[in-house]
Image 1 (cartoon, rainbow, N blue to C red):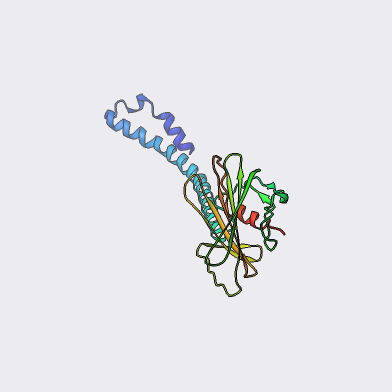
Image 2 (cartoon, rainbow, N blue to C red):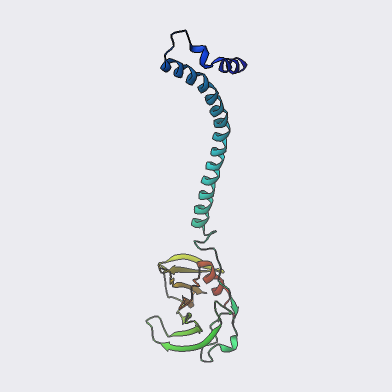
Length: 217
């Protein structure tokens, strides 16, 4: 290193005079001498840079693995943000809704209006309660008693509502409609469908399960 430094100091203009060096030869010699310093500097930086990039690459790969693994196992939702929940006043439970059915105690919005209708269905009488918010949010609840020998198979994404089996689905697009259904004790089927209305509040699978698990007598 000291020899190169000394050599660079000697490489003045007068060093090349009288020795038959052309301008091109002189330029090549100076470039070769100075390139040694550049090469050393680059080599040193590369020794630091390479391990740093390796660590960053490993961390990025690990993050991707954890995210997709958690998503597949249901530990991480595609949308982690939970909606605000309000305690639902069960005094608004429709009086005509049969006592055998539970009713939710958590709502994703403050309920402004409650309506109910009863209809016929191949599996039995169907009671539908619709909760509406001030920004046209809608939460539709469906209640149905089944005969013990009814065999229903869920075709959507399988979920657990407490100890009970159910299914979850959602529509595409910004105005995501979320739907969940589950059967308790093989004789009572519940369904919930949430429509965001004029709000930008969408519900995740976790949100819908949380509401379903809030059902009480």
